[in-house]
Image (cartoon, rainbow, N blue to C red):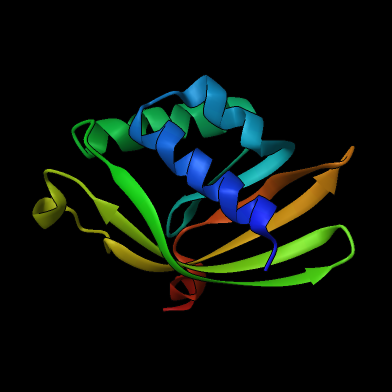
Length: 128
């Protein structure tokens, strides 16, 4: 498993929890795509930041993401990450979205640094 990417995901989770959204953007490619919810994707760092601010507000500024099991498939400068993503929030009972997900992330090596190009915490449930 690519330990660097695992550490990056953990650091991004902390940035989300601490609502350090400018720092969070450093983990993404310039053209990254974030699946905000099924049927809604945003592209680019500015839109991703706006989305995370709205996500934080939706969860009453209490969201704590963590990762469970992680599997990675690496091919050259690209890594597909399959992850059990767990979300905690004070209002999780009220959320219409699953708090335990099977996420898919795509990381790409850019100038020697691994960056997230596709952030899809819903994974294959988008097919449902």
